[in-house]
Length: 113
Length: 116
Image (cartoon, rainbow over all chains, first blue to last red; front, top):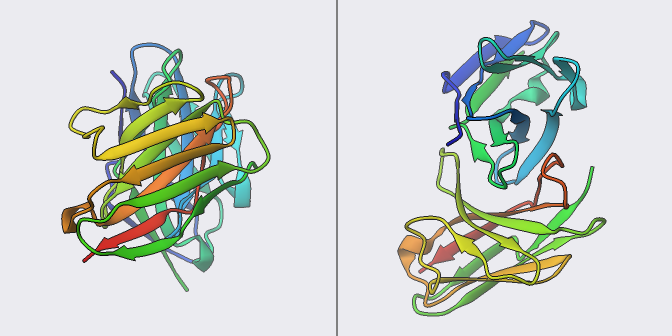
């Protein structure tokens, strides 16, 4: 079985500061890991994914995430937050060979000017 | 990235009526489509997975006769909420993916259903 944990319901940062949104996962095999962002009353927008290769993955809007196999983590990061980054962020995992994707509970990021 | 459209974006209906939601992949062939339900301030709950031309696989606790899913082509899936009741009011989001498992799942903009 696969699962994802996002330990923080809410993350608050000041504009211009670095941000981190945490994600840990559990899979029986090798993971495919994804980050999505959701704005109010909208679907999910894809940010980035890790399939294989370089542990540091760069995605849309300046976001990046680092796959850490020993810590089973895939934290989302951005060097300098923008107010427009304020949204709900979801981490998701799919076990290699499985069709289903499982989502974390979501983390609400608020960037204050 | 790839685009998934969903229609309608918002629907209000009377209790007892049926509502159909369409999900289309606009620029890729969606071998697999997914339907999710999202309650306010909660994560996405997978309702069912469908492969083109096959019957949908429903998650435990999701009534297949209540939520009819059709995936008749590689670009279109429909979710019909039959005999809708107020407790069916929710935000429904579809998602589509190509053939390979490592491919990205792309999401539609969602449909807000309100049953009066």
